[in-house]
Image (cartoon, rainbow, N blue to C red):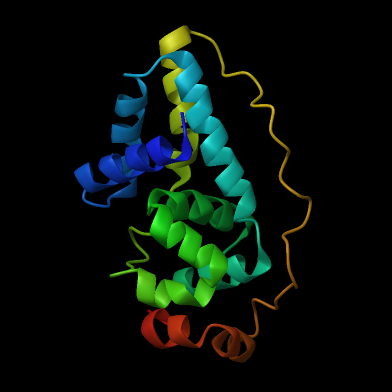
Length: 173
């Protein structure tokens, strides 16, 4: 599976789910079940490598603004959700997390930002297809610390300065 096919699967299942992360995860599993086990593992590798790339302090700061706080787990689920938003949003956010203010049409804290189930979709599909747990993917593990310069997530003024567009559009919702 190449990168284009990976993003096509992400996009088509998100669109069919009307952006609902839980429905998106269910539809993603259904779609992955139409593939052979090796292709599901390829999908998982693509997902995991993007998940690891998104382990960045600035992106965590953006998640903190959007979610009005983001614990370790919340940031993990946010990264899954971000992948689920598709290539343009994902790559744009990695390039400039503050650009999420322009890349997202809307953001509802009660629905958006938590894609935990998306992160398990390939594992679930693989297990359903084969009856066994997915093997190790053979890609580098996530770094111990996020990349970049640490941010003080408790300092609202510093977050507003670092993410002015996000703060103006989505802060304090």
